[in-house]
Image (cartoon, rainbow, N blue to C red; front, side, top):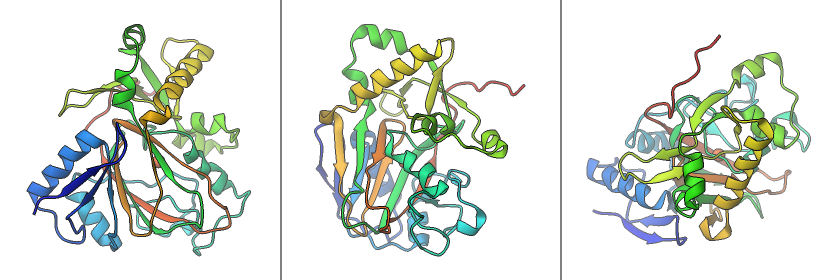
Amino acid sequence: MSIHIRTLGTHIGAEVDGIDLREPLSSAQAEEIHDAMDRYAVLVFHNQPLTNEQHVAFTRALGSLENTMNNTLRNAADFRLPPTFADVSNLDGNNKPFGQDDRRRLFAIGNRLWHSDSSFKAVPAKYSLLRALRIPSKGGNTEFAHMGAAYEALDEDTKDLIEDLVCEHSQIFSRDTIGFREFTPEERERLRPVRQRLVRTLARTGRKSIYLSSHAGTILGWALPEARLLLRDLTEHATQRELVYSHKWQVDDLVMWDNRQTMHRGRAYPASEARDVRRTTVAGDAPTVEQAVAA
Ligand SMILES: [Fe+2]
């Protein structure tokens, strides 16, 4: 059976039905989903009460898994989920919400900045697949912006300016912008910057996009203030409301997005309420640019 698609935003997003993600995915269905991702960049599946194993199996049918350990400041005692999952919840190892001023929470709320998942890794993520098990009474939407549409809306001078630029990405940069600067030497080592092209081309479609993320903190060869201002201007341009789809979560939603051609951000919600959302990630194919050789 082929899937049914209903578009959401003008430039981004579609709702998919006619598919039960608990069932094994046929190669024809997988191809339909890849095509829909190329085209809409964000796909929403409602009423998918998956087990963790089914969530992982669906993800593996679309590509190889990224190991998402070490994306947060959680200690081993806080891990609620196997390393095939990024725990994007606000819950500790006892399933209790982190305290308002807990360092792990203050780091995690950096997700409220516009970003692309794993842009701080040398091989950044392809798809993210986020599933909601518990949601707060209000807030907590996830917003998505289409970086292909954003690229196409740039003037020609700006397209020329950014074509060959290379940025450095690190979670240290994104956290710095919200004043979170207290990292241990071990964390600083783990969070060392990687390089990413600022303009990417999606191999299957040939469509160009701006590869932006709050993790981007420098542009090679540029003075820091000028680099930060260009990145800020581009982000402002790329997140105009017309280019954005805002997802209001329901329990058992699974939302998947293409990190190569979108940015997203979480929105605030009451800190005392549980938000149990968990993510698998399809790994990217290759680095976007050659990495610096470590000194
Ligand atoms: Fe994210």
